[in-house]
Length: 133
Image 1 (cartoon, rainbow, N blue to C red):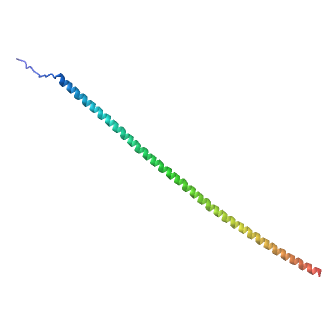
Image 2 (tube, rainbow, N blue to C red):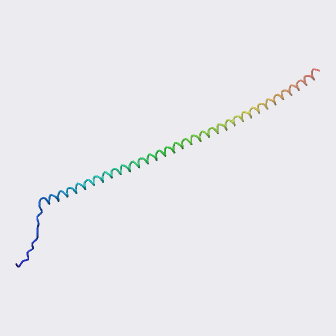
């Protein structure tokens, strides 16, 4: 034999062996598909949970801002009422003082006019008495 013949040992697999390999491959494929499905579902749940957390935080933040705005409005209204009340009291006091001053001036003017009247009458009677005698 001048040639070196290579003899490969080929062992044909039986149908049962090939079928077993196919079944194992299919089982592995189905398991991988279930795992992918489970991972997607878990991811979906995590996304939903994250959304709920963000939504709850947004609601809390919104409620806090509303509370602050309401408090600011109430404080501003209270300050406005206090300023109005203080101004009203000042105006009332100024008005009372002006009325008192006007009454005092009027009373002084009337007293002076009465005094002048009395003096004038007295002078008139003095003159009249001198004329009549």
